[in-house]
Length: 149
Image 1 (tube, rainbow, N blue to C red):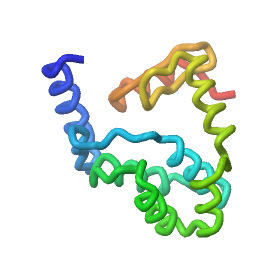
Image 2: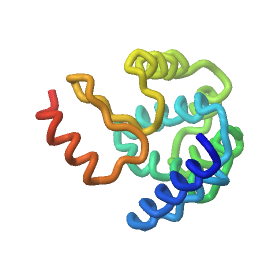
Image 3: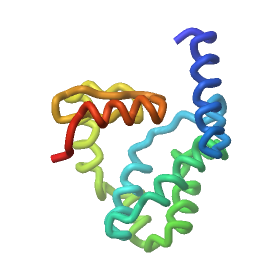
């Protein structure tokens, strides 16, 4: 993507975030290996019995609003503490292979579905909506996709 294309995309993302009350700073968001974060999110899902919406929102805000490096183990431990996760389980998850196979499976599934951007929603018929779609675009996509199975 050219610099001018990125500027237009960044401006659109910031504007869309502002319309939802978010102050997104995508230009300064650090790149990082997301595997440890995704393993930690799986631990949160398990520990909180699927009640993880606030966890995901906190991770997004940490990255896109505060531009903290989610690849830094200290930042991940701070998140886990806010999420009230057990410290020994967090240590085991971040230093070992806990949930590594599940995250690898998620990545492989994304590859099989040709997912190249986040977020991407794939319907059962293979149609998809990717990237920074508007609420209206997502609503139209969901209406066209039909009932969930």
